[in-house]
Amino acid sequence: RFGARPWELDAADSICSQCPVGCNITFNTRREARSDGRIVIKRVMPRQNEQVNEIWMCDKGRFAYHYVESEERLDKPLISKDGKLGKTSWKSALDLASEKLAEHKKNFVVLASGRLSNEDLFNLKSLADMAGGKAVLYSDMGGGDVTTRVGVSAGFDLGKLGAGDAVLVVASDLYEEAPIWWLRLKAASERGAVLIVANPRETKLDKHAQFVIRYAYGDEAATLEDLKGKGKIADAFAKAENAVVFFGSEGLGLDGSESLAAAAADLLKAAGHVGKANSGLIGVWPRVNDQGAWELGFEPVGDLAEELKGKAVYIAGADPAGDDPALAKALKGAKFVVVQDISLTATAGLADVVLPAQAYVEREGTYTSGERRVQRFHPAVPVTGESRPDFVVTSQVARGMGYILEGASASIAFDYLALDVKSFEGLNYAKLAEAPDQWPIVGRSDITFGGTCYDNKSGLGAQLTSAAARGETFKLPAVKKTKSLRPKEGELLAVPVTKLYDQGNTVLPAALLAQRIGEPTVTLNPATAKALDAQAGELVELSWSGSRAEVRVRTDESIATGVALVPRSFGLTVRVPVVVTLKSAGKVK
Ligand code: SF4
Image 1: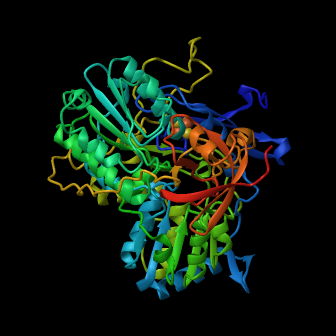
Image 2 (image 1 turned 60 degrees about the vertical axis):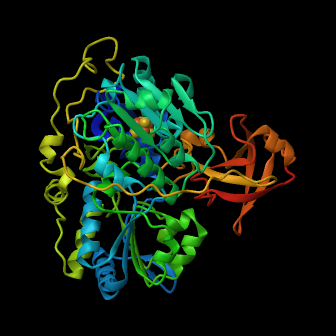
Image 3 (image 1 turned 90 degrees about the horizontal axis):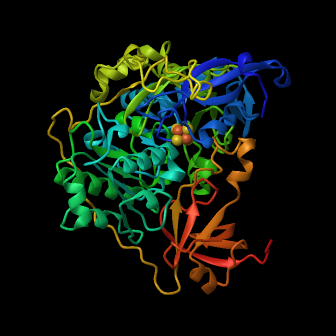
């Protein structure tokens, strides 16, 4: 607090990278004696975009930027020799990476996450296509192939939803996963929109909803199927002028979320809510640019460990080995591993070649939000060591393999992307930078908002079109029947849920958030806790499918008995619903 005077600060416009809302922000920076004279981020402020975050941002976005300044940042390429990584030149690292990936190109996988920009992902996907490899999205959530078809499209504005409109939120706790969407839906409900919340347990959005639907984990798609029938809720949705569905992945793995997305699209289509300006589907994705990755053709796979085994793997912006020991084992069985990342992750530790990437605050690029809005970010701080932007590194790897990709300018890489991908047609950096006047006027000399939010001078971005909005004929995936997951007598069913503050690589380094991040937990209905002889606050041991972890018990009366909520990104590998056993670790604190 009071680490700098406002008049000492420089400002760089950017996009928050912590969730799919894509809030417009401004980084304030200053050269700092305490940081050895480096220019560092001193604070993060919201920047007005009435169609995205209005004038707000959440605490996570404000404080979880420290990973970009972490001690673990990579500043030089590394090559593994005799099982040890050592620093090397860019030339040696690129030559080796290109040579080995070319040698194994019949057996080549690109694994990337939605943490990367559109330009980065476009180059990676192009390389995979040219070399005959596979582009895999590092994610356990499916349904992006559906949002490209019936997702919200150009002209969409959550701020315009009100009386006569309907919003359904299913399998997502927006307060934890995308706080500004929570805020904007609360406001839509206050303006008269019918808000329907469907989740197996209570969430903070429930009290603003006109209708709350409870279902058992596993019954997500079936619940939406029921909404195609008759009844008060079904009628409110079907008769709405505009209707939007937010679907998440609470309690779901890849298959379950794919099935839910298909069911949501089916519901929207049946009620005539696709291809209209203020209607459609929105994925509550785990990462900022997952929607962009789907638009560019990346897709997750069901068995990632199997996909990696025996392959030449090029991993960018993902840490599978850090997240799951089974994936670390699979990588040890890969033919050759190239890792491109900003930090020395557990996955980088297993690589044959490590290529240092710039953090997004050190370069320019674009992200596509869950509302399918493409927005630009700009450099805020100087580059770390010899790191380079991801799209540049990929173009250099590709060149060594005999393929030409844009590697000099992010805006030209974006131009190629817009020529190639239909939903981006007609977009370019100049269009994304258009900044018409917005109301209310903020960040100037007005006394209400001046000083709390920046005026938007560098662009509101632009939304992608969907296949439905373009009037194309398209097929939606069939809704797969999923098994109801009601736990049997004496069984404990663990389901993965998303927490706002987790131990992921982009949150954990934020010292200011340490207390809010906390430790791994298991949340049970008090009756379940009692039946298992576990007390709230007690440390217990959870075991499942050959894995074990110590977690602290929490209780929540709104959870069904026999169900255990296990948070994602806390080092626990519960990625799909799984039966677990719980026993007291005998360490009550
Ligand atoms: S809502 Fe999401 S994008 Fe917005 S500030 Fe919070 S974490 Fe960042």
